[in-house]
Length: 152
Image (tube, rainbow, N blue to C red):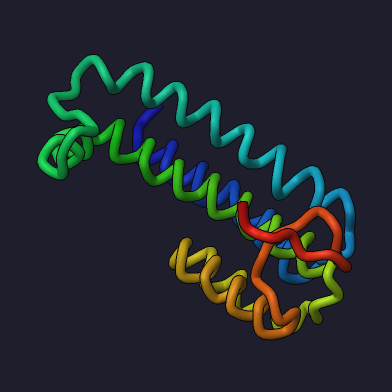
């Protein structure tokens, strides 16, 4: 399969997950199965395939910026990197929706965080943490909505 085709499939595959998170945040199948699990699992398989078929032709490594640049000179590994972003950003976006619902944060306030997470990854997560911290007066992540966990 052509790399451009894989790119198109992966980029299109995440869209239903993001649409579910934005427009159907209370639909449990969307926020607990499709967006955080099924779509990232399919992307993980694509990612593993690209790594397995691309690493042997790579001249890079993870030990320096130049080494990472060398990895991304290989189109298979560049595409794997893109799919890595798609999978993890969608997973984080689904966590944001579930966490906000658990904490009672209005979904309309979460939507800008989701859009930023979709487009800018860590910026969206940081925005969500700021929203969460501002509304909850604590940004600590805990298992219980009523008792924020203290740092270790």
